[in-house]
Amino acid sequence: MSEKLKQDVLSLASCFQRAFGIFCVAADISSRSIWNDAPFCKYCGCARCDYVSAHLALSAEALQNGSAAYPCPIGLSFLIAPFHSAAEQLVLIAGPFLEENSSGAFASGHLNTRLQERIERLPRLSPERAEAIGAILALSAQGLIVHPAARGTAQNGRSDIVYKIKEYISLNYRHKFTLDDIARHVFLSRSYLSGIFKAETGKTLSYYINEVRIEKSKALLCETLLSLLDIALLCGFEDQSYFSKVFKAIEGVAPKDYRAQSFRLGWPES
Image (cartoon, rainbow, N blue to C red; front, side, top):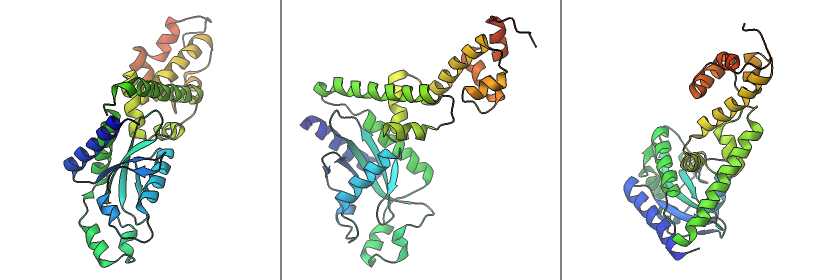
C-alpha cells in the first residue's frame, strides 16, 4: 500500500463529506482497519456495537451480496463503494443517515436520550437521493487516481473483472439473471460493477448482455428451422416481441428478414 494512494483515498473521503454533509471513512477490510475517524460512530455509545468490527464485517457482507448499502447494528443506513487495489480490499463507507419514512432499531426506545437526539440531527434521505449519492460515491471511488506505480496493476485488475463478467454472461445468457446476480458473482456492488464495465468496454452491461444474446440467436436463425419464439427463449429473452425489438435495434433488421437474407437451409418464407 503506497502512502500516496492512502492520502488520495482520504482526500476523496474528506471531499465527499464536505460536499454532501455525510461522514465518509476509508477502510481496509483485508487488514481490518479504518483509516480515519468515523465521528458519529466513534462517539455513538451503543454498547451493542464495536464500530470498527461491525462496519468492517457489514461492509464485507454487503460487497459479497452485491449491495451498495447496509444498516448498522442500531438501524442507521450507510453507503459503501469499493475501489481497486492489487492486494487490499479497500472501501469507502458513507453515513450514517436516516431513510425517509422508515423506522430503524433506534425508534424502539432502547437507546439513551442523548443518542436519540444525535440521531434526529442526521441527514434524512429519500431512497432516490440515497441511490444518487451512492452512485456518486461509487463513481468517485472508481475514478480515483492511483500512484503511477500501481496504475498498471489497477488496469489489469479491472480487466480481470470485465473478463469474469463476460465469462458469466457467456455461460448464463440462456437463463434469466440480473445485474445484481453478476455483482454477487464478482463480489462487487452493482453500481461499481456497471461503472467498471462501461469504462473498460464503452458499453453498458445491459447492452452487452443483449448483444451476446442476439449474436447467439443469429446462428440459430441461420442454421436451424426453429421458430422465432423458440429462438428467443433459447437465447434468454422472455418473449418473441422483445427479442424482435432488441434484434432490430442491434442488427438494423428484423429477425425474420435477417433469416431470409442469410438463407441456408431452404426453409419457406412464411
